[in-house]
Length: 488
Picture 1 (cartoon, helix red, strand yellow):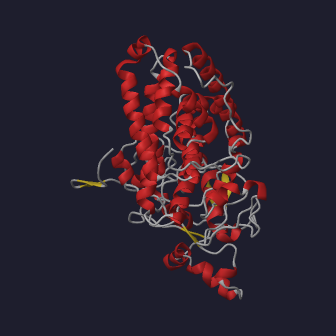
Picture 2 (cartoon, one colour):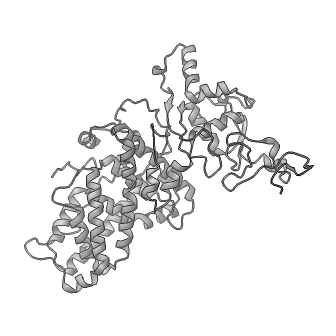
Picture 3 (cartoon, one colour):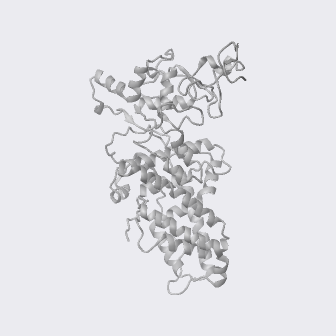
């Protein structure tokens, strides 16, 4: 293919060719405009109609006047019904493709409007099905699009209907469009993301609304604290941490297993604990912890979106990190304090110390560094729960059947964590980055632990408990509403 439309003294008949890329398969001339004249002559009209005009993904039909995919259809509907006002962190020209469509909500909505998606085709009650199947695409002027993107159009509609914006439950809500280089997807989907990658995270405002539970649409954020919807028996956590509570985090609190985790049996405290006894206890305790994790996953609001195969793969891949995060936060506090006291009574033999070797010493050093970092952050229980879910939803886990679903859910919980930090901290951007950078440290520590023979489990757990459970934990908060709040 020639690289230019005019080559030397010769003119090439027909439309000028456009350059396609792997990231942008739809061969667009501009990042936010679909070039209808540049369609490939090798693609039949029938095949062309199967392509989403916004992102190039496989289209499922005519939605709101435009041939589009289910993803862009749902995004446009949520943006309009929730009156989203996004921001682009670049120059409002982010490329749209199936892989990158979630990275900048501003440019995605902009393109929806530019190609003609019709807001009037959406039912006012937000229920499935268009208002009028005969409503086609609409051509908006640049001024009309600008008013919608800034929220002025919603305010004007409210004034014309005699209602103020404050009286609207669906008042314009501001969110950030995350550009290609600032996306949680580009960083969170990689287990080994670097500090340099985290430094690129800059969120000037609250992030896009997500619906991790897959249920009711997320309530628009207007800067006011949300009213708690929990019962009195579930309010102990809220009393311990008086801060703005997002509904998405409330459901994570409710998902925590209510039955407290306890040691399988207790050993006499007046004499040293033997290797065989400690080894048996740890095996039984790990079984209980894994069972607790399974029960926790079943109670998560998005569990129904994951296949059984993917849940199994995620549990297999992340069980060690989940236990480490629980130990870092001493959740539940009773089990880890009891285990630390028991292992303090265990004296390893010289043979065990020799087999522990250099790898064991590296684990102790790494565990101490991670604990110090975690305690300096004074991670709240809400942040801990978000980190635990983000760690579990690792799209890089092996043997996943639907990794895209896992990645989407993971991205949604990045936004939940960001919103919580944004609401409750002055230096939100710095804290958000610092929290995310806890995960690669925890994952690296977990990999080192898995490399150690399980025969060294008693000494290994003793070292970890010594590092993770100091005499005065930084912030021992109870997760389960039925557990009494304990402070040391």
